[in-house]
Length: 406
Ligand SMILES: Cc1ncc(COP(=O)(O)O)c(C=O)c1O
Image (cartoon, rainbow, N blue to C red; front, side, top):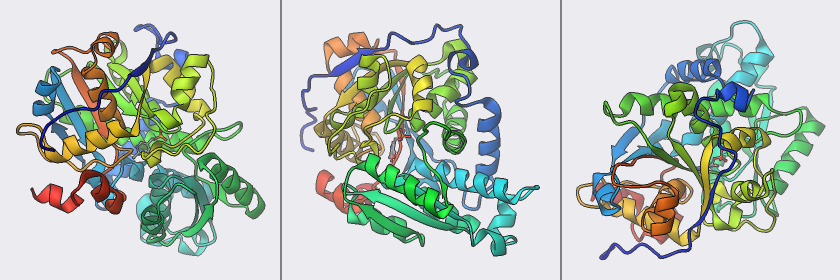
């Protein structure tokens, strides 16, 4: 990028009228979504898995100065367990919890990894529908803990992403329709074959597994609170949403940990897959139909996860949408590094929150509406690296390894 020139776009922002008052507890505002015990158990389990390493929290001072903001912290999930995305800690954790429930007693992750129960787990099948990252996590978890995985993808999932999941030994099924159709196909086959669906979205009578997924995501926030420099209290989190499990986990974790001091949560979505924005506008969960053909593949969801929505409806300060151009610009900004900022590889869906922040910070009205100023301290969850390296190189103009080597 020779000249740093963010695309001018009409910022679509809704300030949430249902935001809970500061003194309200999470349990009274949104009961049964996430809780402290669930986060604690997940973090303890995940931190004991082989290869666990906290991911970096990067400070983007150059970009913060350019946007006339106080601080920007970027949680860089590109290295998570070698899978390239935060989802590694959600789906795989839910696979583990399912196997523990099935086998009963005090079966541990290390027992399963050591193959102690392989004769029983090899006949258990888990399945899921995915935009890419969640399916990779489920496939990886199934391989790690010793069961079988069947993964459903939709027409918008690139061949690169399909191959990355298949590499973990999963049986792949491509549905010639959108994400929500792949969810339905997966549920129907599971019912017929007695498989366990490991979904990151909830529906009537199906909540426990997605709750495990959300609790798994909490490990990121555990790390963030340990990594933040002292006295750097966050004022905002800009966080991208697909079905809403990620933002609900982040918002729920911060609510439990920081209570009345919790930062403002701004949920960011692609313009073409804006089910949270539309739900906020309508005051109830509202589906978005159509091809949902955004470049931000991981966010191409037309329906909110109802359970996550009950929390986001109370915890979000605002909902906003960004066009694909804004995501590409955010990817390039990270790859370039403003001033002395580190050069960071962020994938299309992974930079949704950053794209929203840039769009809002350069627009006087949006800046005012979201209460952004030179004292704001913002957390961004960079939820994936170049999970589709070919697409990344096309969009950024350089391969991920070239960016990192620069
Ligand atoms: C990279 C990335 N970021 C964010 C999300 C959104 O997470 P959720 O669907 O839980 O809202 C996804 C979902 O697949 C994703 O792959």
